[in-house]
Image 1 (cartoon, one colour):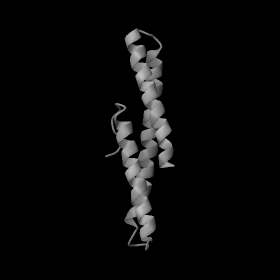
Image 2 (cartoon, helix red, strand yellow; image 1 turned 90 degrees about the horizontal axis):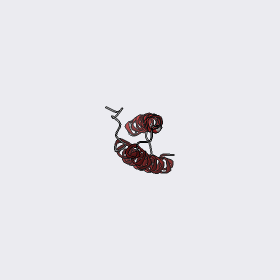
Image 3 (spheres, one colour; image 1 turned 60 degrees about the horizontal axis):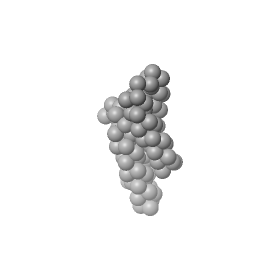
Length: 99
């Protein structure tokens, strides 16, 4: 699921470049497009934040619930991928919703 964010991030990057061109061309429709892109970025931030919380909770339960090392390793990998996605979303220019 986390790796499925890659195409979304690519699409956001393409949209960002197109909007930048549109801004400098003086196109009046750019304001609505900027708003829509901002909403997409916010939704992606919420999704990654929620997933991070779930993965972190599962990882914290490692010793308490005797989670196998292989699953713990997998959860660490998922957490690492979420961190990469979070950084890429952050580069889209919106404030972080994670503390």
